[in-house]
Amino acid sequence: MKTPDITEAEWEVMTVLWQRSPLTANQIIAELQHHTGWAPTTVRTLLDRLARKKIVRAARRDSAITFQPLATKDECVSHESENFLRRVFNGATQPLLLHFTKKARLTPAEIKELQRILKEKGQ
Image (cartoon, rainbow, N blue to C red; front, side, top):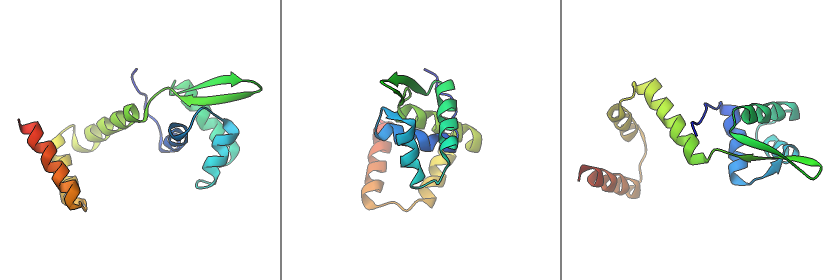
């Protein structure tokens, strides 16, 4: 499945669904209101958009409609990463890696893991 682009707001909804699903719109609204303050209509609009994009599935369950993700978090992260790489670094991986390596505060364990991955890639 080709993963469609999702907005930052849609990403918030997906994060809730990736953590626990299926959920009703009211359950998602309750979860998101804690940190976004969005109105229920905003969340319902985002759910409708995600359903139209075929990233979530809406299914009738008893008297409620529940939502669950059709795209995994890994699929969406890969898609967003590729878009970012193409848009910001013209698709070139090396400048991206150099930028983040220079700017990031890495722990010794993270540095060791990066070295392991690079060594593995070089073989």
